[in-house]
Image (cartoon, rainbow, N blue to C red):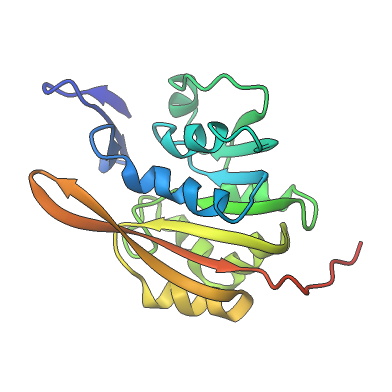
Length: 199
């Protein structure tokens, strides 16, 4: 799962697939920054990874609550996140989403795969389809943001987001990988501020 490479970098692999390391973390941090810029205070994060997204959220003193769903116990056990505002639970993000009340978060961040077209777990495919997007939208407050980390832009995900959300965007985040200039992506959509939430 998490190992230290010969070059000293920490690396996370899941199902034998490289997920991330701690050498280039700007896109993970950008995932958090994007919703912080939109005023998010209560955030649900799917995927702990090496913790860079969650730690960036917690750097903001206005953040009230961060609920993190991480599927792999070993990843949680290796985490060094200690903040009373953060709760890390072992579980599938879809299950954790289903347990949350309607309109209870300002943002939902998904970083559980290498993107919708590069799945770490095949079972996650539904997260990026219209019904999976709808499950995440349900827990968003009006004006809230759903943001998805991806190693590439995904027209199919943008279409799924557009079925339920406004202001759908795909932002390229410049990264430096093995001395090459590349880009990862953050895809977002916002719940309409005028949505009526019924108890």
